[in-house]
Amino acid sequence: MGRRREKGGRVDGLEVKLPSFFRCPISLEVMRSPVSLCTGVTYDRDSIQRWLDSGHRTCPATRLPLPSPVHLVPNLTLRRLIHLWSTPHLLPPPSFPEDLLLDLRSSSSDPLPLLDRLSAFFSSPATDDAQKDRLASSVHFAPALVSRVVDDNAGLQALRATVRVLALVLGMDSGRELAISTLIADLDGSVSALLKVLKSGGGAEEYRIDAATVLESILSSPSCDSERRILIVEKPDLFPELVRLIDPPDRVDPAAADAGLRCLLAAAKGRHARAGMARAGAVPAIARALTAAELPASTAERALKAMEAAARSAEGRAAVCEAAEACVGAVMGRVLKVGREGREAAVAVLWAACVAAEDRRAREAVAGSRGGAAKILVVMQGGCSPAAAGMAGELLRVFKVDAKSCSVGYDTKTTHIMPY
Image (cartoon, rainbow, N blue to C red):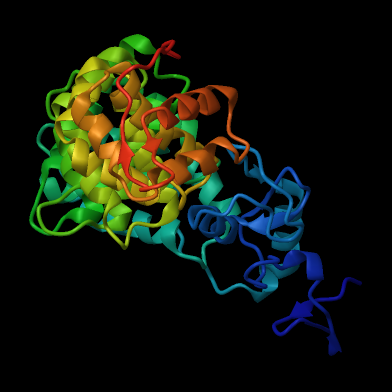
């Protein structure tokens, strides 16, 4: 006869210890979504993601360096073991019968109560991951949601609530590609609806973040080929709204800026898209965001990579040169406060303006930056790629340091080879 475990970790009155490897090495709590790094150590997804988002590029337990990009591999075996062990200890999770999904597709019913239940279901920590996966993977789930997204008669409130659920699902392992492929099946309708949410105001920042998150997932998917990508980036509102998310009129919201930059980077895959970014004012907007003290290192690194992407176009280089003092100041202020990819992106931005464009304003701004030569030298000697080291070397020629007066000037005679 099997023994029944009771709450509190007891079996027939005997104490049952929690296996130590069920706990996340960072939070020391039981893992809900265990993922493994290449070092072999497993962490709870939320905890390791916060570690990475704070700018760290090492394994917390082993201190070994991590490759870029960092891949989080779901540890399905451990998740199943934790589920089997802990099921008797869990509070009853929110339930959502699949047959109620049919009501989402009905034009005669108010979808908001159901959407609110779905949002609670996927965001609640009391809901078991296996239940979330089962619902998200249902063949009825994504079509029911997307039918609401592309419904021309849907009100803005219902549309926002639907996009919120989609953003939650796209943050999971299961159901993600099914949801994306369903959105892509009616790409024009899906993107137009997402842009409608992105353009909305009235204190709707969290919904605008959701819309940018869904757009970024579509653009990053292998299912989004070049033809579909062009359809998205040619939407006239896309880049201006992402710029507004990154650089609002009042103050930078770190979460909104991060979502906007992620989407901007996912969109910036071709010359046409990079030129569109620049024309929408992405370069000065990113420069202003970089100066915000509340912007975390991981978001600042994305900002530098986005500015570097824009600078690969003639329009982007012109924008950097036009706002040379602001751009150079912002880049120099962050160059040593980000990871390797961010440092290399910073060097590429400065190289594009000073060497590729040979712009006098950019050269003067770089040459006049305090400690600029030392910062470029640190990047050059810090294990950067050969291409970045070459650009850094050419940038150092911009500086002429007089050992006697320590005055800094710039050299207009440089030779270079375009790396892209």
